[in-house]
Amino acid sequence: MSKRLLLGLMSLVMVVACSEKEKLDDMHDATNDMRDITNELYDTLRQGDSLSLRRQAYEAILKAPTLFKKISEANKYFMSFEFQIWNKFGQDLEADKRALLGQQAAMEFFMEIEELAPADGSVNPLVEPESDDIYSEKNREAAFDAMAVSMHQHNRKQVRALSQSPEQKPMSMYSMMEEALLSSRDQAQTGYVREILAHESKAIQLLQARYNVFPLVFINAVSHIGNKNFLAQAWQVKMGWTFDVETLNATQLEYLQTEVLNQALASKKLLEKLNIKPELNSHVEELLTKMTVKKSNKKSAKTASQEQLLKVLEQLKPAK
Image 1 (cartoon, rainbow, N blue to C red):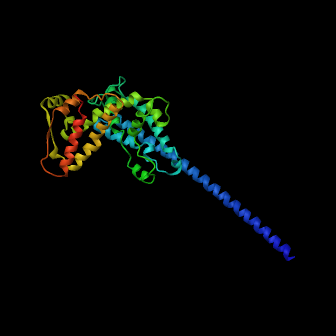
Image 2: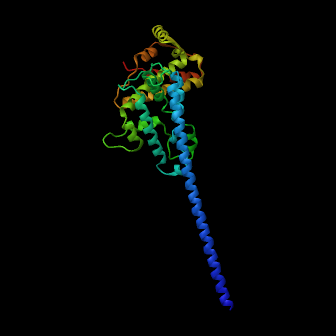
Image 3: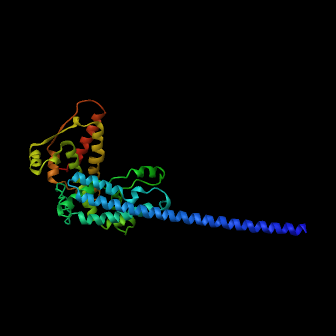
């Protein structure tokens, strides 16, 4: 009798244990399903929010009344791409997710550029925006220039995300474009390289624009020539102008070199590596040629920054 009772109790324990295991399995499956739903929801919301921010920024680029305001809005446009806020969470854990986000960004950006870039492949760094007619040819050209000089920007959130993923490298629209332009033309490419090479002539046009507009950004920063009308600019070109290094602190000198002049020089060197002649607008070239430098005579760390900046300026000038 006790043996039967023992067997019965064992059977009951096994049934209960199996039932509890099934419950745990069901809970595990439900947890996984909930996690997948949460990840999908996060990914969908991020995509929608990112697209909304870019649409707002793009509209603001067109409406901005000056080139420098357009550049400010273009920075926001580039920082809102999803690859900029990839964070190794949820679906971002997938091996190729970041590259896929880069491909989507390149496809979208170059479709926009096709609408903004001068159709003849030219570059006009001196074009005046026309905010009263945002779809005019001149205003679209100014928007193109702003896009060109902003495409190297990184969202600072990348720094935190990449610190946890040392196998990943910083990405920007410019870095993707550089990789694409240096890739082989003898075989069909994939991913963001494919999207960019499908618009190769526009990529070259963007490089030429960067080579031309960044020097103007520098010149305006140290002389405010950009605040003058065309006749006043022409007079200042004829008479010459002075770059007084003493008016800038060491941080400003470093910033102008790193964030402005080095960007122009990198674009120039990339064009040369591609066996394409960098074309500097004659007005921009004359502004650089007519510049007189009033150096600082003080011996300090600022002197080294000053010399480095002047070397970059010399390298930007076309070869004679």
